[in-house]
Amino acid sequence: MSGEEKLPADIVREVINDQLMRIRLALDDRNLSKVAAGSGLHENTVRYIASGKGETPTLATLEKLGNYLFK
Image (tube, rainbow, N blue to C red):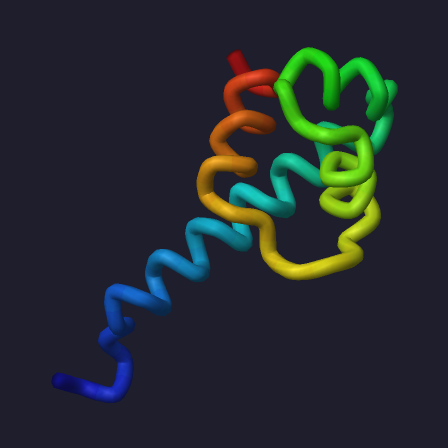
């Protein structure tokens, strides 16, 4: 393996971080209470993601937000 090839886990992290940034940008001008209600997530979860606080959200959480925001 050459030094430039990415490991599968690195590729997954990159995709997750890209999606997370895309979600944060979409949440910037949204009513977070309505996003939480519409996505089925707790309001604090949505607020933590929007603010960048806390740990990286689960794939299930990213999927719920992505489905609500982009579909």
